[in-house]
Image 1 (cartoon, one colour):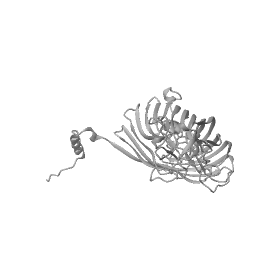
Image 2 (tube, helix red, strand yellow; image 1 turned 120 degrees about the vertical axis):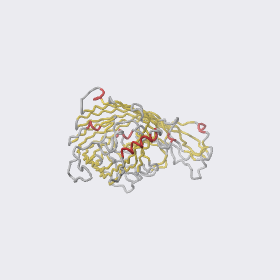
Image 3 (tube, rainbow, N blue to C red; image 1 turned 30 degrees about the vertical axis):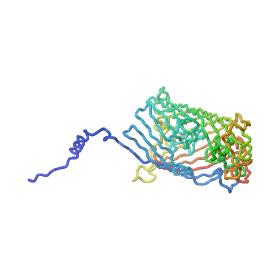
Image 4 (cartoon, one colour; image 1 turned 90 degrees about the vertical axis):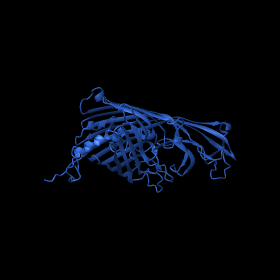
Length: 493
């Protein structure tokens, strides 16, 4: 009888293992990478009582379709201990398309180091992904926070339901926004789940309590803007604080700006921009209570702003004959209260992890798998309500003339070149539109499965005083209210 040989995968594996035993440990390193992305497509109808404006320099009165988010990227890890992420943003006019890009050294769950561009540690709402937030848009609180910035952060979490994070960051991609030293802004956040930490509520309950703070100062280049009142302005200003209607309606419903010079030639004959200095100090509180299909959530933020600038106000041939110092201080408070009910009974506590909410997994998916039949499940349905406000008060404005000798290294050009200055470049700070607003929002969300949902949102905003669309238009209409109905179709992976 003829003898035949056989192939044994087990023997081959053992042989490979023996050979590899003499190799260095890096040969066994495991690199895991997965593709990630999201598309949020919105439709919006706005009723503000303002006449249609043909000049659409601003999105304030623009109903219609919007590709709110379109991102593609990757996440992964090296040996489970070093995590990385890089996500590009395909929507927007910014020349820098990086949304997030960071490395996280996670050798110890109690002390991670993260470097790159990432969400700064402030706000429960911000640290919950846009794929999982309860409403189409975040609240007024979110419009004051740092969001995604370049920086370095140390953070950690513990099984008892406690998390902490502290970071240093710069205000923008441009490192010139730093004052000195690098990372002249700082943020921190601590959270606890009292249901674990203090055994409150028992199984299926989350009692989230958090505190955050932001402090530091940064430079912001002053510039001209066509998004003004009746005509384009040649005055250079820097925006200290602004609010937009919470449901992507009226833009610059409130705006505070400080004046600054532009097109000043220094002693070396090159153009230099005046960069007003802005200091921010903000504190925030978070509370969320969830039991079964019900969730209550609220946040409050109180931020102080101090801005200062020096500018030339009187121009003579070849030199500046008078300077002025300007200062503005303001206090802004924002808060919201929201209540969400999973009509189909999904448990919120199953989505909570490390101080943030994750995605709801429907107990009955609308489409179970690729071979499923559309309609073989209901998906998860949510009903949501939010009450949200902002309120700004001006503490101080000042303009003080200073000696012409205080800026002797600066020389104004002769007024004939491309960088010519004239008296029309008046040094003027300004406050526009309403210093307060209240927005009530009702939402109905259909979560088809873990990767797709449809959101229906209606919001009603009452402004504390009359507002107008800041546009280069002769339009002079004002309004004190705005209603917006919007729909989002969302897919993420």
